[in-house]
Amino acid sequence: MINKLISNIKKTDAPIVVGLDPMLSYIPEFMQKKAFAEYGETLEGAAEAIWQFNKEIVDKTCDLIPAVKPQIAMYEQFGLPGLMAFKKTVDYCKSKDLVVIGDIKRGDIGSTSAAYATGHIGRVKVGGKEYTPFDEDFVTVNPYLGSDGVNPFVKVCQEEKKGLFILVKTSNPSSGEFQDQLVGGRPLYELVGEKVAQWGEDCMGDGYSYIGAVVGATYPEMGKALRKVMPKSYILVPGYGAQGGKGADLVHFFNEDGLGAVVNSSRGIIAAYKQEKYERFGAENFGEASREAVKDMAADIREALAGR
Image 1 (cartoon, helix red, strand yellow):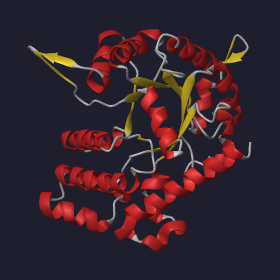
Image 2 (image 1 turned 30 degrees about the vertical axis):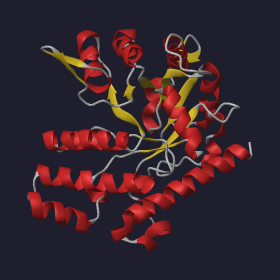
Image 3 (image 1 turned 180 degrees about the vertical axis):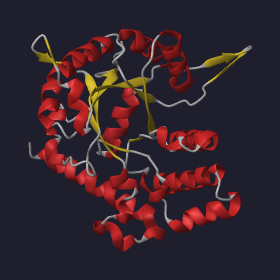
Image 4 (image 1 turned 90 degrees about the vertical axis):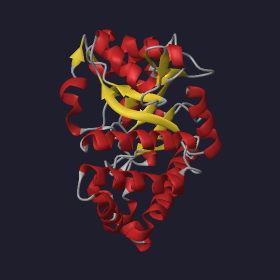
């Protein structure tokens, strides 16, 4: 699957991911009213509004982007109807030839970890039949339970040729409380990065491993160091836009070939119509505002890479 991600990035010339992380507050009032008129002010109504919102954004941006990243918590908060909207979103994005990164951040051990891996990127056997329950292409994994938590995911990746993005240095302000602590004189995130590179050695695509890392855009110097630690690992970079990251901050996340990283923006794109820069589109044309935001983000990153 890493080969497809790279192929999509080359085709679009846009190493970016749209984070499909919808909150009801992001969804225009007219779209909420339509869903509530059909399903009532219920969990089903909220899920329908989210699904229709996602569909419009995907329709307006799918020719410009290589991948999407739905964050499952934004769907789980609406219970089973929300999870059904998550699954519909995954399937629809795949029908548009987009790579889907399921942002699930799972981290457990043994059979529990194996069950998470099976449910999201593997196959489950029911009697004499096999099913792919959620069927994302990549998922995010929390490694802080060690290899016991990650190896079941790696096994499924090897079987299905799918991928992982393992949390190494996250973009949130308090990440350093644990991730920056020194172990033997070195920060913990570097040791985790080395482990990611090790896990990835047996999971190689044509040029990059399908075991990648999550490193926040808000820590560019750490990203520079981790790029050297994980030369064959793709880096998923959250924190662009709404969290403060800019194209100029990102150049060190990429290798000299212009590959090696893919940058995520969530509310900066899906709620672009709420920003002063794009307010001219209005809520009725929120999808067009998202399309313009994607174009601006891609241009910003391309300009930064060209000037490094």
